[in-house]
Length: 347
Image (cartoon, rainbow, N blue to C red; front, side):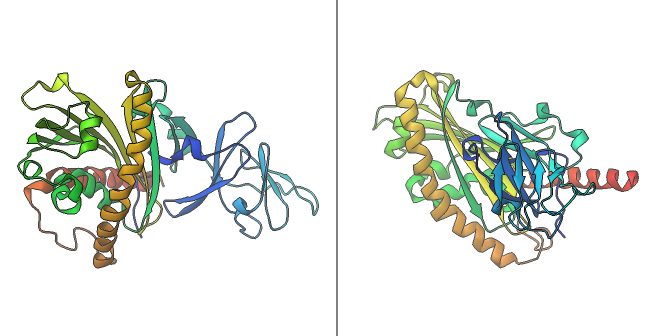
């Protein structure tokens, strides 16, 4: 059975996905979850399973601050209590498990562990996803692979040259790469010099086409699978601080041992005005192509090749380019082990 870090925040979706009056259902850490908004707009998450005959509640009705089971009509409030039973008295034991939910950085976050430990201040910061200061484009994919394989993919961008022809160049191959651990945070920093990138990157970095470009791809990882990509560029030879940087979120929430929710975004500073808004819209669609047609098939093929064999049991050949991904795997494994050890001691 897959071991998950439970006392942490996972992204459950983008705020815009959860619309008033609608029911949204997803599976996280192998548990079916129902999401909806109360009449005041507050997001709610509960187990998507009626305690009577285990029917999926998302097939039922949204009733303001409650939801009605589609099978026999029992109603449950946002705190999980049964509040109506068409067939007699309300059973006192009829209660549905609920999960803490928070909304920050244009996203919905869910806590699958001990509710008493759910502190929204502990959500990994994605400040560039705040629409007050950034133009934000968002997307979501479902990947048929273990979520740590997706972490490996983002922390090792050396695959760009081979997997993404649009970005491939000799300059990308010659990039200087650093893997850095700072406490429980891992960085993979990649610096590319004298590159001739595709046209849309010239626009993204506000650099005249034809100029040679120095650019950076710095990925920050935090457990369990929260990543930020800082992507910036300047005319070759100019200082980095004079350039323009755009940021991407790459967040992976396990659906099961073999499937993963991939939430991604790209953000441009609001100082760019309408140009930035248009670039956010265009770029998130442009990125979806490589994610869906290039990364996704290969990562899924890797997962099929591995089957039920764990990463370390498969005895991977490790190269210097794997440094950041290995650091992240080891930090996450220690966190899961510590959490489970603490739980066993309490039990």
